[in-house]
Image 1 (cartoon, rainbow, N blue to C red):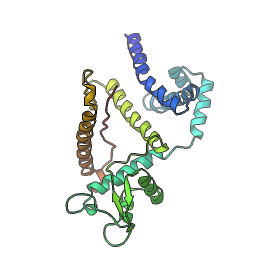
Image 2: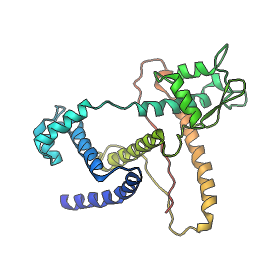
Image 3: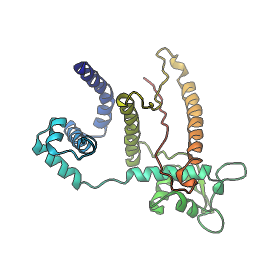
Image 4: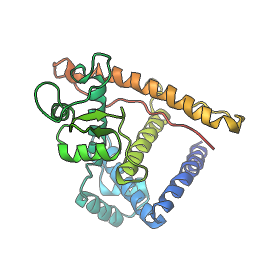
Length: 268
């Protein structure tokens, strides 16, 4: 039974590794670089998540779990410890949070419910206030530059700012777009792994897809428009629900948890 399950995992890996390999080769990443990244991920995960009864995992157990020698485990662990953590994920999250706040916070909405154009600073609601409230510790200048470059906001002739998009979407294949893609893939795989390994009494996380192999190819433009409209509407409703249920809104010190929904289109 264990061998059958292992074969299924290998077969599943072949499916998702092929588009991954295509993307990596187009980006100039070799299999050796990917293999080293894989080695680091195995060692880091074994140390962080595979301790017994809450105790730290030792080098020998990590070597057993990963199939690496203890010498390699020590080397990889030292390299991972010396690496500097990237703040890219924080930048992505805060850019999205600024746009979400602009679309949901009554202080920044016009009477018709749409995000109002905001002066850079001054009396009343302004762009500087929006950044203070939602950008966290990310430098405002860098965040504004990225939001402008990605087309998420625009600077008007009077130097005020207008929201163009509700969600932060960096330009295709620039550094932030690639890092965002990694974040999205990590969320999807995390949900799949949780559903496959959860205890029987634990609730599953929603994951589903709708597909059909017999759709008329001429209907592709109509399908794209349909998905853009319906998926955007769903994401906006989810965003509004999350904004109205933030932990700090109650002011009682309630613990916060990251929640969300991801939607993607299928086209072969």
